[in-house]
Length: 316
Image (cartoon, rainbow, N blue to C red):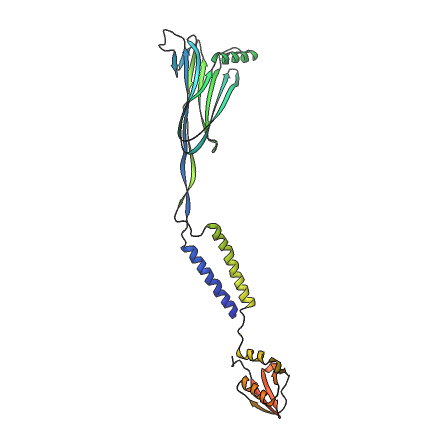
């Protein structure tokens, strides 16, 4: 392995160690997912029956009755009450539908529906959502359907269904109210409240924030290997510029006086110690400087004498 490659590897390792140490010692921010309660909701259906003055009931209003006699009933009103609690801004859909279901023969029909949007933050209570209920109209239309089907029998059941939905997660829950017509009375059945708890996974950060943001860090990760590769190629294939030796400077200075030859003429050979001494002899005898490149010999020839300087890399 040559000296250039050694130097390139040393530079690459030094840069890699420095950069890696910086990344390892750098404080980092981590995150973990925790489950947080997003919101809690509870909705239910309440019934108010308005009745005529009578000796059976002491009030003109029956709240959430289970049985109401037909001859005492004037009209009914359905109230929706709900409680909501959210840790952040929350939207909730509240849908209700009124339909009739018959089991013999089997048929069902939706008579009306409605959808409301509730947006809140913190806690919220609603009690003003009202559904007017005209039982006479519903049962008359049900009797018309039975008549068209050629069937007369027990009256179908009126179904009031309430659905609470979180539009973000799509989860929902429902409660209901069922009213069945018996012999001179209405039987009412209440469903359990539509309770729902929504949870959301959120990221919780812990640890110190990094000194360098991730976008900048990614830039370093791309730039530094590129710089290392450039240094490697430059040192390996191009190398550092060489420093000229003293002899190179002398050759550059006296280049116009040096003549390249293939061989030295016959004569007495006298060695000189330095290139400068050879230059002095050239000046004294007014002779050119000769250079044999293949043997790195410089000489001055005068009166059949050859004054020779041999360059072996000693003079720098």
